Each structure stands twice: as structure tokens, then as C-alpha cells.
Length: 243
Image (cartoon, rainbow, N blue to C red; front, side, top):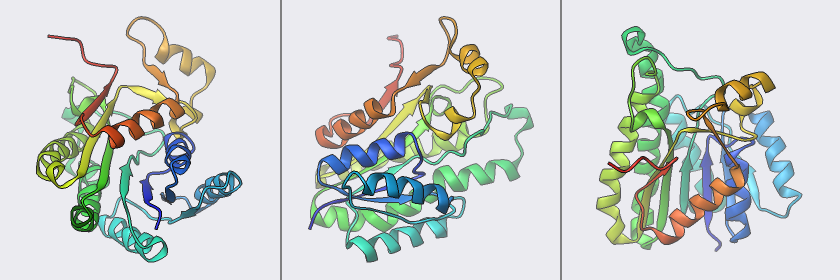
């Protein structure tokens, strides 16, 4: 039975690129995101490329929906071998820490910490039993490099980053890889990228401290290498300056 990658937060950028990259290695693909119509468009595109793929619409702000999606994927494909978790709604902005309410933070904690932990609970026992598997989470730079006035999603992403570091040390010996990609970049063709006007892109990418634009296909190759080589807990882009 061929392996299965479940891509949570699948979209037109990284999610589609990951489906193509892992599909090229013979993986079947499960796509999970909130918008059923957008997912179906990606399914149609990938099916035309001879990738076995199916959509599983779910609102990942509720951890119960995340585990229900895992159950549905297992019923359809029989197994889950790799998880890539990267949901971030387009247009999500930063919030100064002094203005961050517990109500707003709880939404981010559900989406970016509790749901991926629930997914890990649902898939890790079978991965450990098989002696093989992968669990990769995507986060933003504020998880590892907190700064004034750009809080909001950062505390929740810092929590899942902490979890992945601990998890890696616990499951690596059983043949399961856990890793995190921490990105200070905008992914080309993503939902967030599509919201940018040419003027906005020029503003955020200009100058020596401008935001980077990442090619999703190159990033998908990096994720494949992380899963294949299993010798790096965290991928940082850009790489942090040496201290």
C-alpha cells in the first residue's frame, strides 16, 4: 500500500507544491482546509497530473475537526504516513502584545497549537508501531524571534515549536521524524501572496531588511529533504545570523 501525506492548511502555494513533490515520490495525497470549493479546484488540478488526491474540508480552528479529518483520511486511504501542518488564513496580521486579548489568542492557540497536537495524538501511535513517519509544522519567524508590536500568532506558534522540539527527541529513535520550518518570508502563489498588490509587494520586499519571497516548489523540495534525511529538527529561512 503506497504511503499517504496529509496536508493540513492546503492551499494554492505550499500545499499544492507539497502534493506535487510527495506525489512524485508515489505518495497519495489528502488535502485538508476550510474552503471546500478551493480544495476541489486543487484536487482537479492534481488529478489531471495523475496524482491520487482527495479533499477533506475541515475548520481547523476546532481541534475536534482536526482529529475527525484524520479519521476520515484513514477511512479513505487506510493510513497516514506524513503530516504537514501549515494553516494560516490569508490576511492574518500582527497584533501588539499590549493589545492582544485572551479571546483572540485562544483562537490562534486552537488553530496553531491544539489542533496539531490533537493530530499528533491521532497519528503517532501507528507511525511508531510501523517504525516510520513524518510530522512537519510550518511557523513564522516570531515563534523563534519575538519582537515588539508583532505578537498575535507568535505565542501560539512558539508553543507548537516547543512541542516539536520535545517530540523529535522522543520519537526519532522509533523511526519517526518531527520537524518545524520557521519562515520569515511570503510564499509565492499562496493566499496571502494573492492579496498583495504590486505596490504592497514592492514595499514589503524592498531594502536590505525586506521580506523574502519563497518559491513554493523549492520549499516543497526542502520539506521532502527534511523528511527523507531526518537530521535537522528545524529549518529556518533565512538562516539566523551566527552569534
